[in-house]
Image 1 (cartoon, one colour):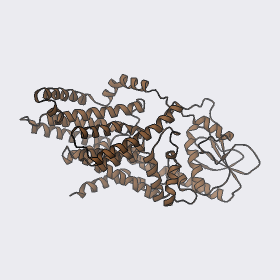
Image 2 (image 1 turned 90 degrees about the horizontal axis):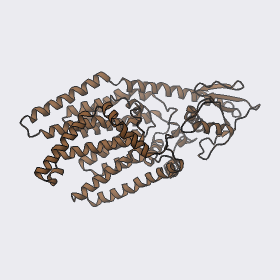
Image 3 (image 1 turned 135 degrees about the vertical axis):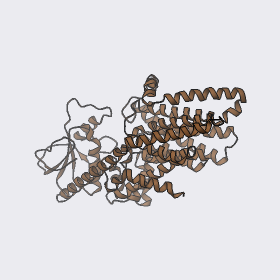
Image 4 (image 1 turned 180 degrees about the vertical axis):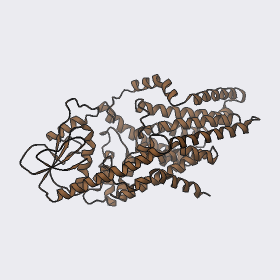
Amino acid sequence: MKWLPWLIFAVFGFFLVGNNFSAKLGMIDDHEIAMFLGGDGKINLTEIPEVIMSTEIGQWGSYLRYRPSYYTLRVIESALWRDNASLWYVSRYLMLVVSLWLGWKIVSTYFPKIVSYLFVFYILTMPFWPDLLTRLGPSEIYAIPASLLFVYGLIKNKLWMVSLGYAVCVGAKENFLILFPILIGWAGYKVYSKKLTRRELIATIVLTLYTLFIAGAILVATSRAGIDIYGTKISYRYRITKLLWDIPKITQNRNLFLAAILMVVAGIFSAWYCFKQGYKKMIHGSIFRHVVLILVLVIVIASQYIFYINLLPSNMRYDFPALLLFPIIDLIALRTIVVFFAKHKYGKVIKISIYAAIVVCCSFYVFHNGYRMIQAQSEKNAVNTQKFETGLLRSKRLIGKNREVTIIFVSKSYADFEPIVSVERFLTAGGVTNEFRLYYNPAKTTSDPMELDDRLKQVMKGNLGTDHIFDRFSAYKLDDKPCYSITFGEALPLPQCSAIAQF
């Protein structure tokens, strides 16, 4: 019954995010879709390369991040789905179903199917999923199935899975560059065991060049700016020192004591086995592979804490993949016990007991935590995006009656930066050609690490910068021209303008 897992995960996926099917394009991230589509609302096949190169892909070394696979896939999706929100959310649903199936296949390679199902169900109770699964924009939505495909490819020795999964992951977000040492380790082991094929060698070289190309773009940009994309100073010495200082707290918070003890026990057993049987037999043993795998996952987790400066958990999409790897380490540690006692006279009893304990623990978390957070967030997403679309349609209808009226965007917080960009792009894509101006009146104490406050002040003065985001805006001034005001956040409409929308 090969179709049964697909059916189970299709129903489970719909149970989680079914509310998304009534959602519309949203204010955050989705404005890029409107920008890609332009005034005619479509991207022809011949236009795809040009649109792709208009993103950060065509600006090597200029942006603080460089995501070639993310924007390539996003532009292709824009060409396919256009502004049909239903098609966008269906594609995300299908990615979720594929991801669930891949996760189940990976776990069921080493555990019984019922344990694998329950572990997947348990994983989805973690608090970072609502932010990740209920939006169209996060790059992690591509990285989730890609990372699972990469891992499954390593397990099954499928080069196309390894290559495709790696290329998408590394090009989706910079924190997945940590997969590069894993790729090199995989190729190195192949060389050591004299099993590296010509195709695998070529693929490794190509993926290495691809990785260096991405890393180079980020290093050039961040070295010029001195900060990362989140406005944090680049100081790896500080980040590593902080991680080492916080290890006891992280170990306690993430319940890693069991895994740590099991790693030590497995390490001692591996050393003893090496002494008794010899080095070559030891490195080919299951215990040694389990220890190495746990160490690799610990390094991956450490890299994420360094990348986000120990701000995990955030209960947002940034927790992926770090927080997901903690229960996986526990699972591997338990598998280590099963392998350790495999030939013991009580080995079967121990194995059954461990599997039963996993089933009980996963069932407890599933019933205790449930999935209300994901469902509530997807419902909230549907409501918010419908409200946003209603505001946009009303604005376009009123503006369409008077092409001469000036549109003034009113804000009092730098947090409105992306909403302002979003509304401008949606209106522009909707055929609005009126003059845009920005009235920005923040609190005197306003400051932010990404300097968005200063950028909005400059836009108000007519200094638009070099990235062309605000090219539609003119300098703010008071004149006798009729005007409409669109307000953001807690800002109040301008007295001299008719208020048409608030976002």
